[in-house]
Image (cartoon, rainbow, N blue to C red; front, side):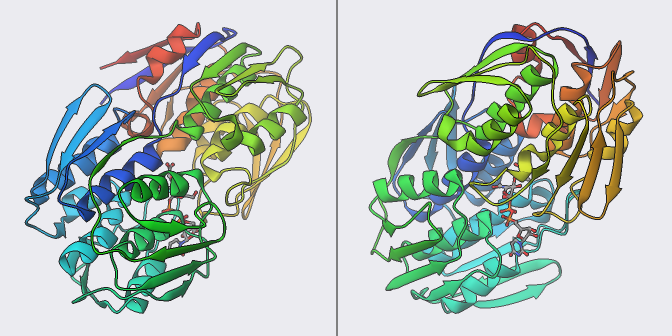
Length: 416
Ligand code: EPZ
């Protein structure tokens, strides 16, 4: 198992280029199931999760060729409609093939994703939406089996705003019979990116990015080419690396508008920022002032940045109360940060972080994607060496992270 060795204490300086968004590429790749024509996707990050969904589509019969950051996808000869447990258990976002499979073939058999480190991750809202569109759903032997002669447009209201639930139902609705109204949907930029790609291919979608999306079903969707938007969470993670090390870091090829809540938090913590149309610079020359953070659905502070901002607050001046409102168990990075000397108390979905002068550093273990990112952030400022084990979690969501951090002056190596 690979691990990463970081020697803390370096101020990060310089520029880093942001890769394509994992959580946009995943639904966009799944949406290629909706038409027999070829799709050419660019700015697709080279990540484990992208490999997983590529393998999933290939085992169903799709032909996918990767050249650099471009994926050439052809699902004309798709024959199976099954997403096997072996693949789904490694990535719950595989559930994103459910809507497209039912829409195109009238059936799908997808392993229930099961929980993961951060929570039970149910898909009851995905299923309820498909049932509203006329699908028969059965849960058998850990699989969800869906059948529908032809999906019909319906009025669906989500009790909780769910990102992949919104994406699954939007993909099911684009070639359904009639109009579908999705209420209380997720407004995340990744939902908008998917809607833009579907629209380019002939779908009729209005309201993506607001809390109501209206989809008029069309007979068929064509293929098309699309450039995946930059990853706002990767960008936010490198800003956190610049902040914690007292550095001066510019993230390039990002969309600053996607990071308003993160920028507001960094500014409140005393950091200077300079923003252009596609870059953000953070200058941390007067330490970190502790600020409170509360995760919320977009455009609020993203839950996927909670672990990283907590790492920054471990050396902030004063007390920071961090509230996680999206997932029920997204503090698993706390015990590991404590091992590094952080002073954090947990109270339900609150974490109370008291800033310390310095972090002595320690060998730690990654438990999930963003938790491992927070250990890297903390390791960059910890005294001496920090060893992070099980960093395959990191490889799921960060492309060439140690290379990008080394370019910024970090002392970081991956050890086989
Ligand atoms: C997406 O997960 C992201 N993954 C997550 O990123 C992200 O943390 C999350 O949205 C929230 O922003 C992808 O896009 C592939 P949800 P998703 O459905 O869609 C509850 C990362 O680090 N819920 O918006 O699975 C659920 O339990 C990953 O890149 C139901 O109750 O999240 C949670 O409490 C981690 N029933 C809340 O909604 C459902 O049917 C939000 O979950 C669906 C969700």
